[in-house]
Length: 71
Image (cartoon, rainbow, N blue to C red; front, side):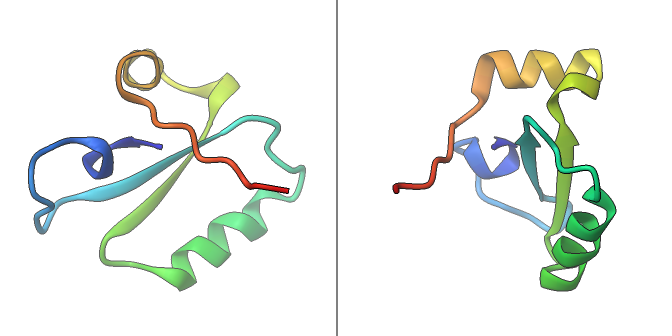
């Protein structure tokens, strides 16, 4: 996770949740649709790590928080 949710500043109207995903499923459009249905305010941005922009890669390197599932 990167962006507004991991920063110490309070969330605001323009805040968005940015989730970085490695090994994105082939049917990733279904994931986008599910996230859009889950929340439009704040917006949930899904980033495919290998396709990340330079700015996104910098954010990943400097502020990412890793979310894992305990099994």
